[in-house]
Image (cartoon, rainbow over all chains, first blue to last red; front, side, top):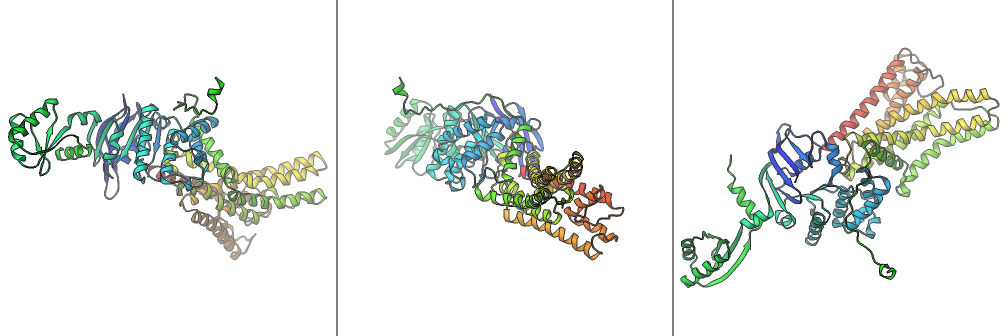
Length: 309
Length: 296
């Protein structure tokens, strides 16, 4: 099932130098955890604002959970939880007060808002601290409060804008695990916008990459990993001969470094062919390992392959 | 079995909420109530309560004193429509300068607004709720002393007609209080929402209110003072919302000595128009401000 669908979505910010933030973006997001990847300025935040129904697109349309963003913004915002990128918490309120109040603003009755605020804060791992003023929190705790307020209204879809911003490596890992848990155990679809592909790829089921307001690629993670499994063969000498020998056996190797060849991994017999070729040429083999491309590299390749048209 | 259950915290996992949800109007009402409470410092720290409490105590004291004097057989000193005119301007301005930023500048400062706009509210709902809340808070501040004075006076009324006369005098007073609240809340909010810096917002509100009032008073004074019939004296009141409100009062038939020249000549309707324009400009500015904020 698609949770988000956009068709020729275009957003031009008027002005002296008109900025095209989205340029005919047609893409659909499946249920599950989707990474929305793009460099800063790629159009991620603009897309999120259109999906929330806060700004109208210049052209095209978008549907969130089957509702049109142009006409059903209120309904969509009942079903969405949004975690903004920047700091957005009042320092002089406690987490409990804030999340309860925002639960009310999501349309929860008073007692339910209180209960769900406590639960949401527990889910994100804030316990006794929730009665402390937010101004005294660490960055990691603040990010958790931002996530809790997105969860409090029981959304069907979460839009998380750069959720690991400002966190140290341990904090990033904890936040990513939390997001993965929400996606897997709570049955809530999640869109995680990030400029750090390497970081979010491990928690995503799907990836959507945009650049300059256009779709670069949308695919499931499994399709990436299946297609792009490779074997790295490292020999101390004779790299060119080995490549020729492999080619004679039908394996197209690419040179990746002074001593390394990358060979597409077809099946188990690929190992045998490589072993035999190395043995035939009597080359000193120093390494043979299966490697998964960093998805980031693949996107870089894709970007280079995209025709300029 | 019971011993197994002792001391075990069960993680219930994530629970969906399938129950009823509030409609947009009810959410706006909840936000209005929340903001009204903040305007009085309720649900906030002790410090936030000091100023609103001092303001309401101060503005009610003259009413208490007068009601006490009435009980001892003296006359009611203040007209309900011009209750402590200058003092009321000062108290309302202080309250407005302190509490309008409390309602809007804090949220701007902490950039919490995207969390509101990503919820089932329309763009205008947030400023609307804040406006209703501040109007309500000002109504309490302005009308409470009138009611104290009224209750104190009718408690010593000798006859039914005495009570009726007092009630007839009170109603225009309450009406003028409503006009004060409606207009000053709009002006206070639009000024305060210009900046997220609370100190600046307080300064902008206080300076605008006091300065315009002083300028109006100066102009009226140099043009011959209260009661003068020159155009300058009659139009001077248009410079400040407080004197505009007072002009409307006179135009509508108020006779007590207030802030403004007691004779407006034929300019009465102009005061009415300017009051409406001030209100419309303030509310329009407030809506435009939040439309911009919601998209940025």
